[in-house]
Length: 160
Length: 160
DNA sequence: CGTTATGTGATTGTGTACAATATGATACTG
DNA sequence: CAGTATCATATTGTACACAATCACATAACG
Image (cartoon, rainbow over all chains, first blue to last red; front, side, top):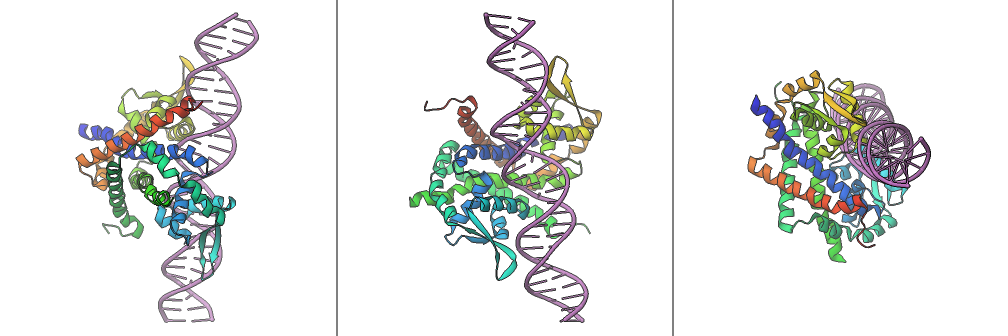
């Protein structure tokens, strides 16, 4: 019993560290991204669109890459559309899908964002090896949690 | 120029990994905490209150521990008050401060939360050494970002 | 005592984040 | 072809998260 309560303290360590780090990262990006008038999640979405010159993906594909659902992406993408960075059009071959495409303005923003990784890398102050190790640890954590989540998604209850 | 764009891809790695991991952690806690009718940030606040049996802190002190500001904590604490887990009273010695105190119900909830760390630890699937290393890496990251942030908080611009 | 500075929390507005549900299109079945 | 199932996205509601601002109280100064 006493050990359980001790864990209530220990527990706070890792899960809280992940949570606090995430918010610290978003805060650190904010002033840099403000020059591009982007929020951090908007920046992540633009990174995906910038990756391929074709730059046409459905909302669902974007959500899979960013691990975000449509309820989050739809208003975010509408704001990017308002700013003229992307277009949102129904897929003519499948009227259910909405395709996101970069505009010329959105593509041009890539030049201005080119310096962001370097500027942020300096803030992080991690050498490449340690950054790689941290990234690997985090990805394994996500993989472990997602694997556990399959039962929820597929509705396959363990007992019954 | 081409190297800068290559970094736009590499950059996505670490910052995105932190962000995605944080959301995966919150998602993983959700079903476990639902039994206690707590959200993850509410659980973090309760952990701080459970740590000390006195369990009386101001909103500001709580925000310092959790690195959250009052705009986030005030509505969160009001919801906990509505559920009868905490009380919110003005400090009689300093009418500006609002003190948060556990109720008997809030203190009792600690028993039911005792198993949460163990259940979540199983989901994480990390051995103690690796969990400790990940936690240390994340804390160093937060420290580096916060140190960089002092210039913003104190308004001491580097140039002028 | 009036004035100003500071400090603490509340309020407001914008922007995620996600569960639950609704809507409409496509695919499958008989 | 009608009925059903399924899939992709939109909509709604709740809950963070934080910047900017407001309101009030204490403190410091003349």
